[in-house]
Image (cartoon, rainbow, N blue to C red):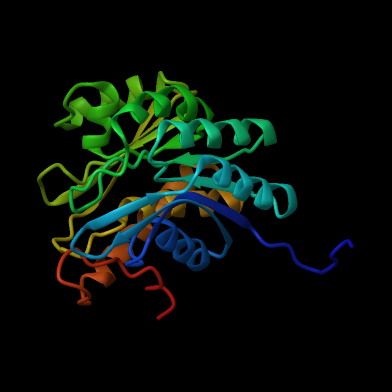
Length: 273
């Protein structure tokens, strides 16, 4: 039966792992989607036993079940934008890439999650090549931090000059744009670098560096914020600008709270309460 109504949701889908502590992964993505005015959906690729201190265990979902979740969501509900996070294995990566190509999904944001804030590995070594060959060519935007960029390129990325060269080289794997996050650089400013491949143009996005241990899930939140803005019809540059403002505000507000004994979360709903 056809559903009728006056309004249409902006639909954002997260394909990622579950964080039982709620600060990162699927949970952070769905909070971000809601905060930015989107109807959030999820395809869970792995369950983690996780809290502010670290990742205690990982239970990956069978790739066949990941495929079924994707089909369930895309064939009925559809998606205006997709954020991809933790996929864990090469087989899961190939499964996700295959369905996205088969369904002609557009506006894909890839956060190449490899290591949690606590240092725990979230991507198997053999899966790195699959990220480069299977997923990056599908992505409108990838959002690696400096350690992730170093793994993908096989060389260190340690300065703003390194970041420009790295962003160009990462785009060479086939994605339309790269948002290289510079939060690991020391300084009073947190400077991210957006590279738009089709224009061969760099855009620097800076915000005051906020010294806080409540930074769990910042990468997940930023990438899902971009996806939410794309789902709402923004162009890529505008979406990244809005997402940068959002994550900066969420970190600033979250710094005032205390939760857990390690890296606490950001405040996803700081604009509402």
